[in-house]
Length: 477
Image 1 (cartoon, one colour):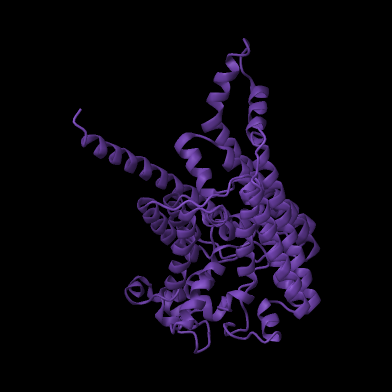
Image 2 (cartoon, rainbow, N blue to C red; image 1 turned 180 degrees about the vertical axis):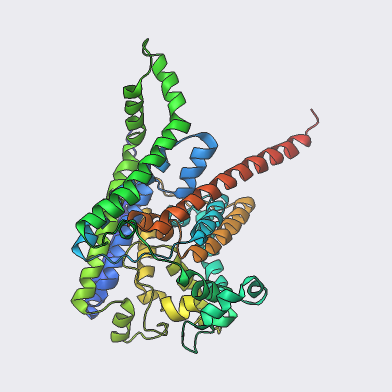
């Protein structure tokens, strides 16, 4: 059925695109360096459109799978991951990849578990909440706010949390030689990062097989084939076997009189993969865009002779909020949660709180003004891209949250904020990007996230049953 889109929706879509276009043109007119920020902006816009079009949300994926047995979104996520792996492998083989692997240890799985529970409670993952914000979803806005505030405060917390810091972490952190401006011995996250995480090995699948990440064999066979395609296929086979097979066989048995064989199940598996063209198309575009962003950002770094956007901001005269080593958060690829934490960190710094004495802000990411922060431009544009797509499909509508949903959004956002900082990323930075680039920590976070989602779904089933029983008890039947 054809959807009739109101004229005002089309006008607002043009306004949003025009606004971002005006920003790109005007800032480029000031200095060509701003094209670096505009690159982040337009890739964020593309991500927002793809996410909204494909309804990509990790929370929805696992909730739908575990609660009602619908695999569509899990399949879509696997498709996008495999396609991103192909494009990122090609970029890595050219030597232009901006990706850097993360330390590998059990901390990634534990953090993923916490994050997984949180995203089910909140009703959306980090990226899903961003694009749903672009649809006017008030619950998602609260989720983003909760994640942001939690992260910005958690990275500077000490006090009672320091009681959980092993002495080995404390001693190792002090030996890292960080500048005096970073009070590394007085915060949980600082000691966790410098005293534990940084001491863990950084390994990709290519390296574990004796290959180099920036060679065609290492990128395609080591990281792409062994690190992504094989695990993704195993997950898809498991999804088909446990959630799709019985229903497919039951439906097929009504159409044929002979026994159902392997060939039939292969057709059923392929049908599961191709069940949603909209999700598959979005996954294809996401995969291409994610790989292309790494190529473009590295090209701009080479053009301007920089390794980090902090140098560009200093050259432009924006030295406020630059980290102690002269950097700002500039991953070079799609990321979500850190730039939102920077929004709140910058605001708290302006209000008098010292947010530059910790590793997260003060040593690595900085807290530049949101107006000239490349990753901030990406997230704002992601919301805008999602809004444009929602407007053009008649799916934009502001939805105010109920008190109950608002509470779950805040709790879920809190857990996702904690999980993100323990994992050094969210469902995008710690899973999607790392997994697609052959980082071993990516699947660890993913397994933890799946386990957390399962716990979250089971909890909500129990909670809903208790709530319904309580409400029914109020009736005199």
